[in-house]
Length: 142
Image 1 (cartoon, helix red, strand yellow):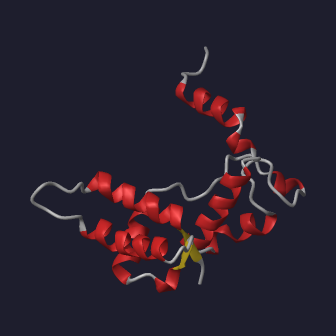
Image 2: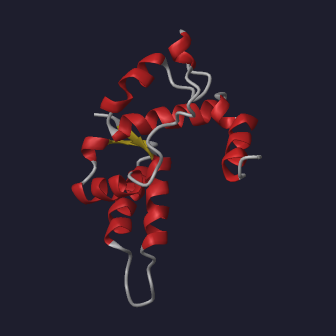
């Protein structure tokens, strides 16, 4: 199994806090409660990751509920691995990661997302991504 980083647990907690905020008379939502228990143990133990198979089922279910709202792939439709590069200039994934992406588990995919985000060198993280997003929002010139 693959480890889930604490930042993903935090993101999932924040997702569920927005979707099901606590109010004065009610405690935390079941999803936040399940994830918060995992998060608290990670902080207490000074761990930055938890094995996917070590998550209680309710915490895993809550994490998967958040995961399902995230983009599946970092692809920006500029795949230099198809041109022979070992590392895609567009998304930052390795050739093997691109090839095996459909079969990868959610935790494996999040590990790749974390690596490429920390590296911050792929075109998806530079001005190209900003220009592509602007172009998508503008009507085509006639």
